[in-house]
Image (tube, rainbow, N blue to C red; front, top):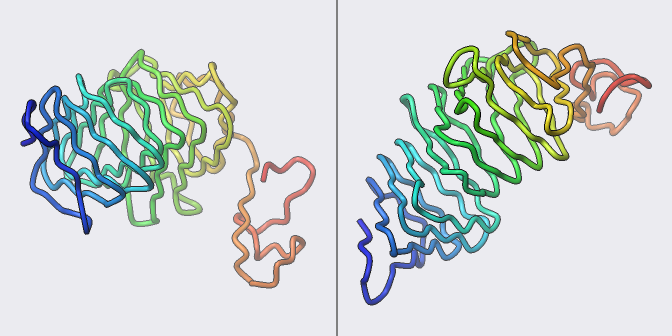
Length: 239
């Protein structure tokens, strides 16, 4: 616990740290000073969390940032619990948010970020619930299930009620199962190998999207083995 009104607020120094839990009271701050931090249990940030560079802040329990502030710099917030996890981002801005938890992650509020990421292997399931009537505003979205799977699920916190998604620029979406997402405020979301579970707006599920893998190492565009799926892109393929 970091109380307010201390003579000197703490600064992480010398090496990254793993701590059991984290509570930053209103008026107090914690500066990561370029070092990674892992919080094994719940975190309540009603004061300030200050990132100075590309730190990774890994949360394994529930996270509540309501009433607090985050200075994101170029940091990554990783949601990496091994049980269901709730994250209340309180409408704040982050740099990268990486959903690594293979249980359900519930976003209890809207937020903005440079990039929202999730990568699911063929033997992993990732499930997310987004707060109804709240907006997730992103510069980029990168959701990638293993080819041939739909192992990333995106749902509203209340079935049948929309959650809003606004993506401004880059995106790569493969193998997602989506419901109740209104993305009409931003770019069309082209989701390859994905499932439309209904009530989605500004999503395109029939798009052909190719990803360069360079599997052969020969650097040849015309070699299908360098692409996923293994088909050379043509004039109607999104790359």
